[in-house]
Image (cartoon, rainbow, N blue to C red):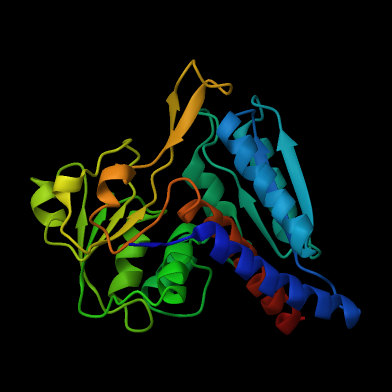
Length: 294
């Protein structure tokens, strides 16, 4: 069994980007600038945004954090988005989800300029991704593809089963795995909450990508020997015995499933670190586009 070590690969990617940024600085050029918008005080969101800002610092990017109070109105947030769209110093930005319930997430994401949408959530970028045109690919599916490429996992002609149909992970990864090219050419089955007998499908799968958000959902009796297992799930499970009061659990029953898998991502330390690395890669691409357009 080979561990798909997202932490290791993400550090390699960050080092590659840092080397590019050092060359930009040496040439006296503008370095990439990533901004993040955070509304409210959601614990998980604070953690994620903190990691992104630290990663920017480490590789030499400029970063800006706009932290807004929980009671920020939709109109006020839209104004911040407009300002970021117009700020030529900022190459790309993210609006951290989830947003407070009184704000329409779709309306906010639609307002982000596609050329600065380094999360890859805007319909323009999603559409380009589906058509295999150069664009920002949603960071988590992008990270999964990069892991598969760097570990040279064979996907061509294989049967991949994706669990979960979210627009952020499930749908895009099902499209990317089926496309022509490296880490593609798979035959993909996209399953979801209405799929009958998911286990019957996962048992046939050469590759399983689980992005469901149910702790330990994928058991050993649901996968075949030698399967490739990608665990995207991150769930905070309450546990009073822990200092934080919770622990992070993936979708996959790791101890049991790892005994059967040929490749498997650890959770945490698998897909999560890759997501941040690919967000930085998207920001680098955004900066290149802006330089080319100026």
